[in-house]
Image 1 (tube, rainbow, N blue to C red):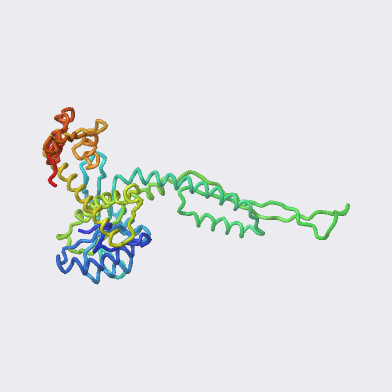
Image 2 (cartoon, rainbow, N blue to C red):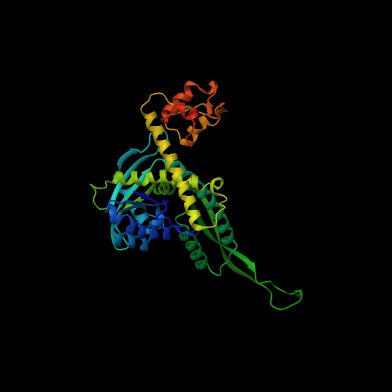
Length: 390
């Protein structure tokens, strides 16, 4: 499986390169570098930036299976969501993580057309999106009311020569805002206004003012439409995955969801490489040296990931969690949090009469907790007292 964010063939990437272009160029390189060696066992996993007519065309041409997220801007996404909500034929997947607050997933599978090609679409309902999207919709409601108040104020200032024009304007105003969360109503009423006098100067004493009948619109913002809010929330609680792997036995719908969610693990690792404190200043000018330094970072990241994997596999076999700084107990620590346990350790070096170097670990550091932590990581106290070979 390849997830976006992995450098391919040592290419120096332009920071301004769009994700869609990055995906297309990477797919083309994968087809040349990997597919001839590993066959069609490659599975390309990427976010919604992958989905474009050109990228899907390249994937079809190179016959590379992929998993991606269908952007919500596509009309097809809304259609699939509405169909899934109306059918209510969900398959329970449950949690994909052991965390207490992990999301609970339900899925529905459909087949559909996009850019004249057939794909499998997995409509996914996530419980973790409920509260998140509820807050989003609450903000939309507040913003919508402020915009409606402004629009209603502008409409009230307009005048119309006849009643039918005012009624038509009111109906157009209401139709344009039919999808709003707020209930809107309006009335048309007449007003008498003095006609402007023709000519200049003061009015003569005998002047009799003339009046005309004009029409105005009064609109009001009513209560919230809870049905529309609930419908909008249901639409926001789901997202859609797509794949060109049509064999449901080779790639079941549940595996599609699992593999898509796994890309977060890859992206979370590369977040460290994007940290300004790590790569803020690189004092290298030669592109080859910059590339070499980049690979050193990648090798370091690989060692970091292997250490974390070893720690978690060891703790999975034990019943007792490990205690981290801050008196936190866990059985799935990150490598960074685990390494903090050793940040205060001091090793004493002394030179013997024969010029040999002797290393010693003070007894205050030789605790049972430290010994257990080292054992979990696959080491012992010798790593502090053994003199490295020259």
